[in-house]
Structures are given as C-alpha cells and as structure tokens.
Amino acid sequence: MTYGSFRQVRDFSRGLLEAGVKPGDHSAVWLPNGIEWVVAVFSLANLGAVFVPVNTRFKADELEYILRQSDSSVLILQDRFQKADFLKMLEQVCPELPASPPGSLRSSRLPT
Image 1: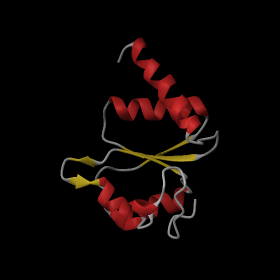
Image 2: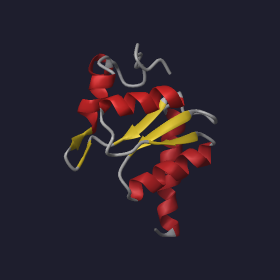
Image 3: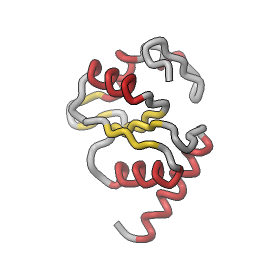
Image 4: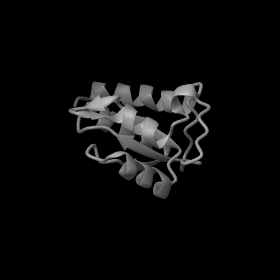
C-alpha cells in the first residue's frame, strides 16, 4: 500500500459521510482481507465510526447475531467471497432489502 492509496480512504470516507455515517456509528465490515478491507477500516477510523469486524465464514444466523449485538447501523460488504453469497445471506436476515430504496432500509429483525 502506498501513500497514494490513502486517496481511496479520503474518497471512501467522503462517500460514507454522504451515506449518513456519523462519528460513533457502529459499522460492520464483511470483507475478505485485501485493500478494500484496509480502505474501509481506515475510512471508518477517519470518520470516528466504530469498526465491527464480520468473519467472512459466517452464515446467516451468525451475521444476524453480530449485527444485532453490535448495534451496527452500517454494513460494508461485497456481493460474494469464494463460495459464500453474502447478498443472499443478507437477504435471509433482512428480507426487506430487495424492496427497499437505497438509503431507506427498515428491518424488523435489524432495527438499527
């Protein structure tokens, strides 16, 4: 990672702010090890948000547990990793997701 890579942190931080992430927000990161994970974690730190790691091997029930227990209001993820379909698991936990417009998800199982 070079110093120039930290431009990605600045840009991602700006995107998180525009999405409504505020200092103190609990923000779950469900990404494999890689530059995207580093950028997400540094961006959250830059904003003063609380980083909540999510294991890439979690199943739907484990995802729901960590999101509920951590009071996460943000989930940063990619659609899939290896054989795991993260979006499919998220839809199992949060069936309201497909019908919700971006930025206005309301979930009975994940109130925050």
